[in-house]
Length: 293
View 1 (cartoon, rainbow, N blue to C red):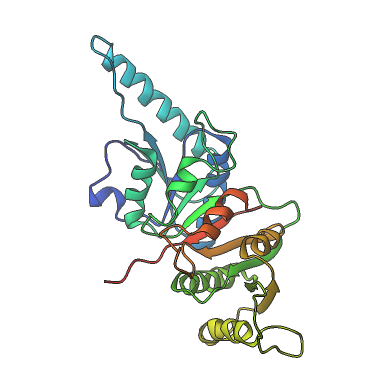
View 2: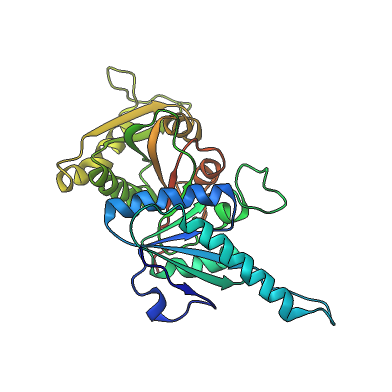
C-alpha cells in the first residue's frame, strides 16, 4: 500500500489528479467507520482512496509560541492519519493535511473526486448530536456524491435502496444506485412514497394512485434497459418519504437519495435528505445536481 503525506491547501493538480474516493478523517470513531466503508468501496472499484485531515486555522493571541503550537497540531494530524491508515486493509491510500474550515476543505477536495466519504459525526463539542457539522455541511455542496457512513445494520441485506420522487436529483440518484447495485451484484429497491391528499384520485385495483404508479414506472424505465443485469424491485409505499426511507435503511446495504426534491421549498439540501443524514440507520449517499443556467 502506497502512502504519501502532503500538506497545504491541495491546489496542485499533481497531488489530486488521480483522486477517486476522498475520505474526511478527524480522529473520531465515526471517521474510522468512514475509512473502512471507503476502503471496501475502493476495493470493489479497484481504485485508491485519499484520507484528508483538515486542521482548523489557528488564531493565536499575541506572544503565543505559535510555531510550537503549530508543530503540535501538525504532529497530531499526522497521528490521526496514520491511525486511519491502519483501517485501510488492502489497496492504495494517500494522506493529506489541509488547513481551514473542515467543511470547506472537503468540499474543495471533492472537486476532483468521484465520491466524498464522511463520518456521521466528528470530535467537536457537540459530538453527541446525531449528525455533525461536516455530515450536514457537505451534501448538496460537494462536487460529487457524498457518503455519510454509518455502521452497517446487524444483518444487512445485499440491497441498494433509492428514493424516487420524479425530481432531477432523484434521477441522478437512480443512475448512481443502478451502477452501485450492478457493482455489488445487489438487488435494487426503487422506493416512491406517497401520502393521500384531499380530492378524488384515480386508483389502481391495488388502491394505489395511478399518477404515483406512473411516476415510478417512468422513473425506472430507461435505467432498466441500461442495466439489464440489475434485479429491480419497484415499490410504491404509502407514507411520508422520510419515514418510508428510514424504515428501508434499517436493513439495506446502502440508501441513495438526491439532495433536493420537488416542491417550492426545495433548496440545495432538501428536508428529506437533511433528515436522512441525521437519522438513517446505515450508509447513505446524497447526490447533488448542479443548477441549470
